[in-house]
Image (tube, rainbow, N blue to C red; front, side, top):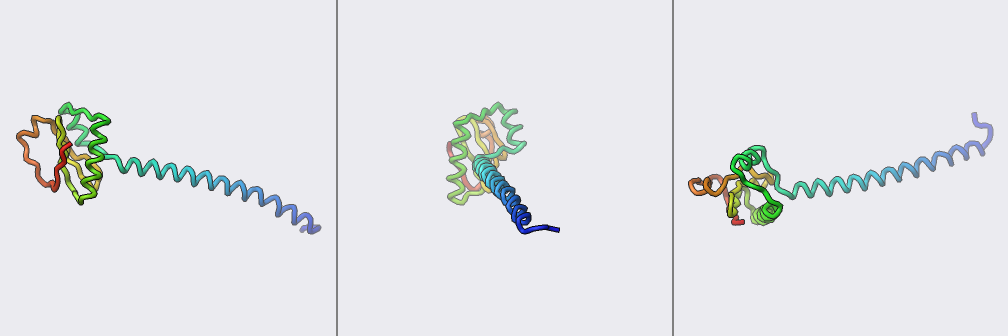
Length: 128
C-alpha cells in the first residue's frame, strides 16, 4: 500500500524515461527498416539471373561485365515501359532471353548459337 502521494508521483516519473528510450529505439528501428527497404528496392531494379542462365553463361564462355549489365538493366526498364513481357536482348557477343515481369534472365547464348537459332515465345527484341 502507498503511504503517501509523493511516493506515487515518484513512481510515475520513473516510468517516463523508459518510455522515452523506447521511442528512441523505435526511431532507430524505423531508420533501419527504411535502409533495408531501399536496399531491397535497388535489388529488385537490377536483373536477376536464373540458375539455368548462369550455367549457360559459364558453359558458353559469356562474360557479364558491369557495362553490359547496366545496358541490360536499361533495356529491361525501357521494355517494361513499353509493355513487353519476354524479350531477347542481342549484344555483340551474346543474346539473352529475359522475362520482364520476373526481372530475370532466363538463358543466354553466344554468337555462334544465335546464327542457327529461332527465338520463340518472345514479344520484343532489343539490340544492346
